[in-house]
Length: 272
Length: 262
Figure 1 (cartoon, chains in turn yellow, brown):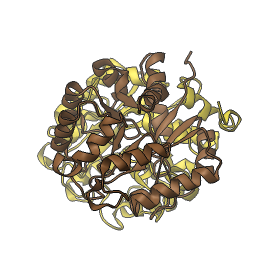
Figure 2 (spheres, chains in turn cyan, green):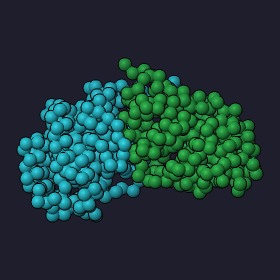
Figure 3 (tube, one colour):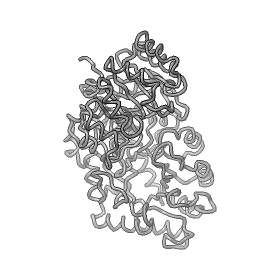
Figure 4 (cartoon, chains in turn red, cyan):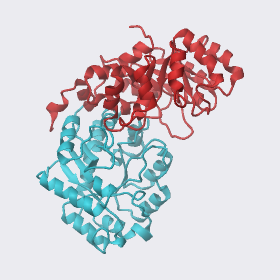
């Protein structure tokens, strides 16, 4: 095989090239759904189907939020998420989804999710729910998250200045900008890239169907590996897709380990 | 313990492009260096100039660059083609275009029907497709989708093409999640339809295709240097499929297609 010496220079690249399980490397997937989706055919979309994929790769834990929650019925979604976490308590970290279009339910659902259902973080989808992240109906969610130092991962952080303002207003919230690290092509810095560089409590996840050449390397150079979180968007996408982007990136193995799991461990406040 | 498997990338490009990704190669030497780093043994390569400017010029430049590099055995040229009727391919017959291509040692063709604004229907591309079919030249079709939610793929035209050209090996390029409800019926109906894997990233999607349709239906590709190569490699490396299937998708299926060209 040509070039063997070159790619053995990275142990993680070597393992990715062979498809070797990442035992001994902490891998935490920050962005995982569960169940079917209206616009996609998704095979193996139940909890066992996710864990099977995690086992092949060596993904230790995954933050999950069921597709039903970001779609039509967030209460149904939260129930499905909690059930999956009960089925695989050592593997799934359940995140609650709140739909701001049902403000009358919100307080009770927050209590239910973080009481009875044992949720550990929050996922918002401002796109599917057609609601601005800084709108009044989300306020109770941010207040709750700030009081408890939770992670809020949101698909969409609003127009110019909103992300920075919310990150400043809620300093105890770890604001994860879904897809922002993954989609970036590494050329003109986006607002999320700029804010993540400035604000300590802003992080970027890698979940993305697009993997522009050199984009991850530029993100590491601009915001630092400490601000990037591996996220697969499983089961919309294959968990090995973004994983490969990290394993094969022209960055150090230490930076890869931060992105794959060590950053998430810190942000999620996980114990050893 | 995973078994090593070879990779023959069916989707690589060389040449300068309108947009260059950070750190991206554009020369033959740069491509070979990146293949070494990633662990890719061979690649089928087309010209960026052929895609983004003029197929005839780009195809010629591609051969010039490969010749200047001493015809690396690891690289195999793929020409970008247009239907012959506007005579932009330098001949007034599709058969002559394909014969010239084969005489130049090129055994694969790539079509960009959306970007190059032509129809795959018989009234437009029929003579070209028949010439390629006659010589068993595999045809890579790129409808120009960037994101999976783009809707450039003309599924009905693709259906008619496959129906009318039963012996043509068609490889659909850069098709992503959200395509299965179109793809599965076509894969079921047409055994010579294959999927290139660079953007085919449904959850356990390679495994699902292998189970349902067989590992003969997938070809490993990366889309370098527009897209990062690692995701495509990892998806294949970690897929829950047999070692035989991994070898087939990684390299043997493409070798089989190129070996059938007459």
